[in-house]
Length: 278
Length: 269
Ligand SMILES: Nc1ncnc2c1ncn2[C@@H]1O[C@H](COP(=O)(O)OP(=O)(O)O)[C@@H](O)[C@H]1O
Ligand SMILES: [Mg+2]
Image 1 (spheres, rainbow over the protein chains, first blue to last red):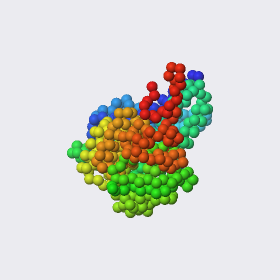
Image 2 (image 1 turned 180 degrees about the vertical axis):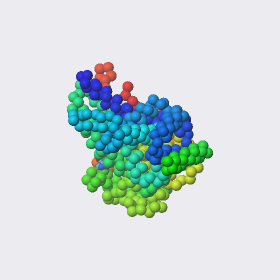
Image 3 (image 1 turned 90 degrees about the vertical axis):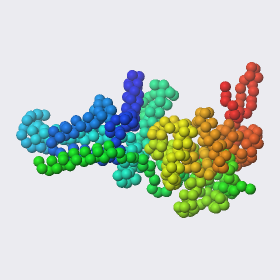
Image 4 (image 1 turned 180 degrees about the horizontal axis):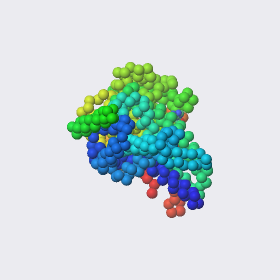
C-alpha cells in the first residue's frame, strides 16, 4: 500500500517536475535585462560566450565568466537558487564521465599527489591530471550555465524562430518543434493515465496493470502521432501552405542590442587574441 | 438565381479504398446560403466537409466549385490553389490538428501569411477578432496547452482571419460553454449577413435553427436521407429518432411514467 503510494507520488512528482523545467517560461516573460534583448542578438552573443569558454585555457578567465553569468542572471530577475539547481542537474552528466578518468595517471601522466589502493590496483592522482580535470569541470560548468541562462530567458518558440533565421534547415527546426510537442503530449498522457486509473480503481491497482495501461497508451501515442501528422498536413494545406512556410518576423533590434553586441564582440576578440599571444 | 458555389453529384468516397465514408451524395450550395449538415457520429459529415475544402478527392461522382470540376490536379496550378484557399476556409473538428504553430499568435497569422495578404490588413483583422473572441491573454501561449474551448476559439479565429467567402465549420460548438457558443454563432451570422456562405456540421440540434436555412440529414448509410428547411426537419421526430439525433427520454412524474422524445433542445434537470 505504502509502496504503491510512493510510486504514484514519485511518478506524478517526476512528471510535473519535467513539465515545469522544460515548459515553464515564467522567467522568459519577466522584464529583466536579457529578456529585453533581441533574441537573435542574444543568441549570437551567447554563442560567442560559449566559444570564448571553449578557447580559453585560464581558469581565472573561466571563473570571471561564470561570475558574469551569475550577475547576468541576477539582472534578469532570475532566482539564483533556481538557476543553480537548474544548471547543476545537467553538469554531472556532462563532466563526471569525461573528467574523472583524466584525474588518474593512466590518462594524464605527471607528478603524483595522491595514491589510492584499490584491491591491488594503484590509482595515482597527478598534479597535471588534477589541474586539467578542474579546468575541464569549470569549463563545463560555465558553458552549461550560459546555455541554461539563454534557455531560461528566451521563450522556446523564439529560439526556434532564431534557428530558422540563422538558416538552420527547416526540417530540423520543424522536427525540434514537433519533438517538443510530443514530449508534452507524452507527459500529459502519462499524467492523465495515472489520474484515470486512480479515479476508476482507487489506489488498489496492481502496478503490473498500471504498466500495461501505460504501455498501451504509448503505442497508441505513436499511432496517434502518425495520424496527427497527416491531418496536420491537411490543416496546413487548407490554410494555404505550399512548400515553404512564410514565418512571422516581428523581432526588432534596438540601440541597446547593438551596444550589447558590440561590447561582447570586443570582449570575445580580446579573449581569442589574448589566448593566442600567451 | 444566385450563383452556385458547390455542386456535388452522386459522390462516393472511401478511406484507403475500404472504409466507405460517403455513398452517393447529391448537394447544391448557392452563394450566401447557410447550410447545416446533421447526422450521428460516423455518418460522413467530416468527410463531406474535407471534400468541399479540396483536401480529399472523390472516388466516383463529381464535385464542382464555381462550375469548375474540383480535382487533385487542379491544385497543381498555384494560382488556382491560392485562389481556392483564399476563398474557402475550414475549421477542423479536432482543434489539435488545426493548431500546429508554437504560439497562438503565430497560429492565427499562419493562414494570411501563407496567402501573402497585406500586413496592415492582417493586423486590423487580427485586432478585431482577438477583441471579439476575447483571446488576447492566450496569444503568447502554446496552443496545445489550452483548454478545449480555448483551442476551438483559436481555431475559429485562425480560419476567420483569412476572410474566406465560404466558411466551413466542422462541429464548431462542440465542447463549448453556452456563452462562447453564442459568441461563435453571432460571429457566423454576422459573416453571413456580409454575404458569406456558411456550411456547418453538427449534432447539436440547439443551434441548427439559427445557423441554417437549409438542413441536410445524413444517415448511418452515409448518404443524405432528407433535406429541407430547419423547421420542417426539426419537427420530423421520427426522422431524427431513426438517425440517432434524438433519443427516447423516459422519466417519472408522480406515479405515471412518461415517454417522450428528447431533442436536446432543453437541458435535463
Ligand atoms: N482516416 C480515416 N480512415 C479510415 N476511416 C475513416 C477515417 N476517417 C473517417 N473514417 C470513417 O468514415 C466514416 C465517416 O466518418 P466521418 O466523416 O468522420 O463522420 P462524422 O464526421 O459524421 O462523424 C466513418 O465510418 C469513419 O469510421
Ligand atoms: Mg466529424
